[in-house]
Image (tube, rainbow, N blue to C red):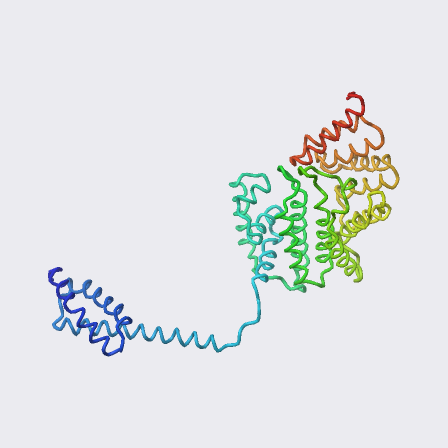
Length: 414
């Protein structure tokens, strides 16, 4: 063994000599310094154990030369690769938007529940943080993090593929239905937040519209994708008039329709007309868009073509019947045949199990029809029941105000 200080002194004295020789051979200094340093480090590591070679200067020079040569070869190969790539024709624009659509299809895998799919979509495609998603759904951040984590694990177990499935693929219809459903839920949550101080979550509805536009561009032959986009546009057009100056809810019949966005209505209507020009039975999104278009067409609330809306709800029940669709049909029926007919349909619905019994909207609809029918006491009961069940502050204030006015109008009697 050789003492470390002796070796260090030796290396210090030989370093300039080795660098000088190597630089003279290669024609440059800067590119040789790293090679010489690596050779010195190797010598400092091995010489104390193996002993100083008989020709230390030659050992260092050989070691540094080998490292320098390796570097030059690597650099040459890199330049060749860069030159080859530079000579290749530019790839066609294939942009990240394709990635967002593939992400959307992956996040909307049928193996996931709608709640998990929405959470994962907002996280991966919408770019929202877990905290923002948790705030949107009024759940603790840890709960949302677990939901997203479980969704990822389920996706992994299902071997989901990162791609937009081909329209002819066996699972395409199911995947597309899931994507449309998730976008529909996203938009609804943005248009009428299920809870919190604001009626709207504009960021959610905007993101849903953006993704729906993207989906329609990629799949222009899918009528329900076009129908969903039309539904979003025709509904979003009313948002400016849907709240008052203090964020209070303004019901459809009382909205200032001059504030509706006419460009969105025109775009949504043209899109919808194009879908009905195709063959095939319209699906749930085209029918809902048709209902929205009838509302948007009326210059005044009293001009609304309720018989046409009632007919469309009847078709919608056949295509995608649900208690909520029947609830909406009861409103249309009341507008056509009077509140008693609407209440009779609600009674029939309740006898069949009803919409969710404690759903605030079911109480709100019944309260409105009872008020129209002149049953003040029953209307008050259901307005208060609806207000107690909603977690949306604007909706709660609206229902409470309606109950208070009705109570005052009835002379303070319950």
